[in-house]
Length: 85
View (tube, rainbow, N blue to C red):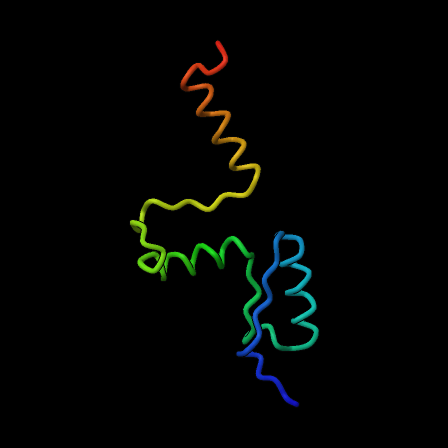
């Protein structure tokens, strides 16, 4: 069974894994026709294309990793003087 590289997509969760995957696909020789993308980047592109299906407004979404979420929470607490700070 022969697979077309156009039918493959590698989703990774870290930049380190993405670089490693690109290295492997370069060795195999399919990099130019294979998607190797971070999951969050893919998810953002997917949502940007299908935001109507999610029944939201296009500019109301944000995709963040856990570090980004923590920074946002800390900024909210600092701006709103939560916990007497």
